[in-house]
Length: 324
Ligand code: SF4
Image 1 (spheres, rainbow, N blue to C red):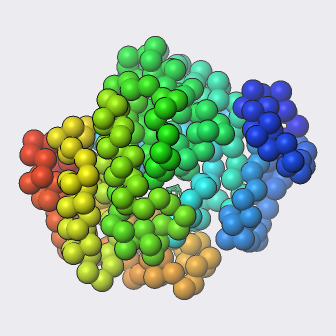
Image 2: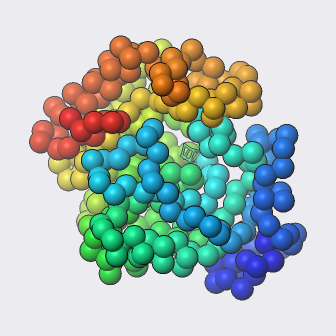
């Protein structure tokens, strides 16, 4: 823990949850996090948490590989780096030099920075791209902090991307049109093979269904789609399970995209995971972004898009780089 993180409310809350934790005080999280040649995989499994104070730039313009949902002012932010889950294809393994989770406890600074942007124009911000913030909500209260801001800022839309499905996750939240809960949906064979430690498809469907029942804005994301043997059957079965498990006509919108990752990140991921089928797949490098060959990507995405259009006619389906 950074020494300067001590006085923050979030720090105190976390320390009270882990009274037995061995506390190592440091000056700056990068002393630990940014060292070269770290065992990223081992660190990830170790479950260590670094509490830090984020300084400098707090809000970023959306990257080209991100789905922007047709928004003019699309941003993202990293309140936490690394994730409690362990998806094999996760780009974070290619981004960060360490597998430790870093939690920035100065939530208020992120909100203040967003307010400055809101003074200029409406803001759409994804707060959970570099982690799964909802999975850590009990510990951090971050989603509630963003929710409080969204309740007083009508021009703010916040996307909370998640694979979590805790039974009581909605209890501490309140439905607001500006808070969009975006569930990543994957066929169970993809969950089993590549999304280690994440809730099953059935639990994600149940969590999204409960959110809809309580009036939350729910988005379903079929992104990243992963190509595995029998992908058609797997994705077809998934769509069937989803349409049986929740009212698709009440879902806000859908996003569809096949796996893609910047070339530099994939290079590092391949070094880290020499035996991973999803990482070692012979992707095509198109303009610095590794992705499935265009015909295959088109086939996969169109399959899910058409399935959604048949099951939920009239609903928006967004695809990476374009709205259909
Ligand atoms: S849930 Fe998202 S952020 Fe977390 S490991 Fe999986 S892909 Fe990465």
